[in-house]
Structure formats: C-alpha cells, structure tokens
Length: 67
Image (spheres, one colour):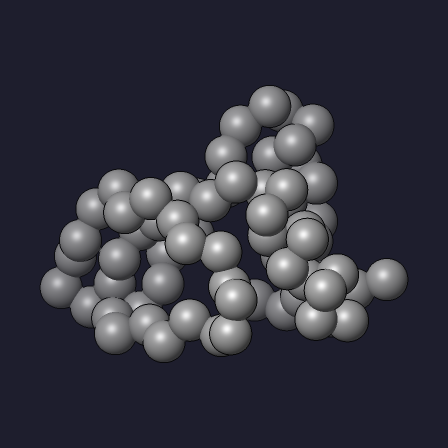
C-alpha cells in the first residue's frame, strides 16, 4: 500500500466516522513513531489491527509522505 492509498483510506474512514482496519504481515516492524493500533485478530501469517485514521494521517504528514 502506498502512502497515497493509505491517505485515501484514512480520509474515507474519517468521512464514514469509523476506524481503519489494516492487515499487516507477521512479524511487522513498525516504522518510527507509527501509531499503535488495536489488535483485532491474529492469523497464521498476518495480524489485523484497527487504527484511528487521524493518527495515520498525522503520521503520514509528519514524515513528509503526503502533502
């Protein structure tokens, strides 16, 4: 997923008033200061997390990944 796609998903989640759900590989090493999400489900090779979309947008902007 590109930063632009992540930004679009975050904006859609904000518009709908929901959190974002991301499926991340196991193990997933978070980039520096990447938001901590709520673990929803553990699978054999992935974990499913719920994230606050505002925190995702803030992280993207702070790391100059989006305008």
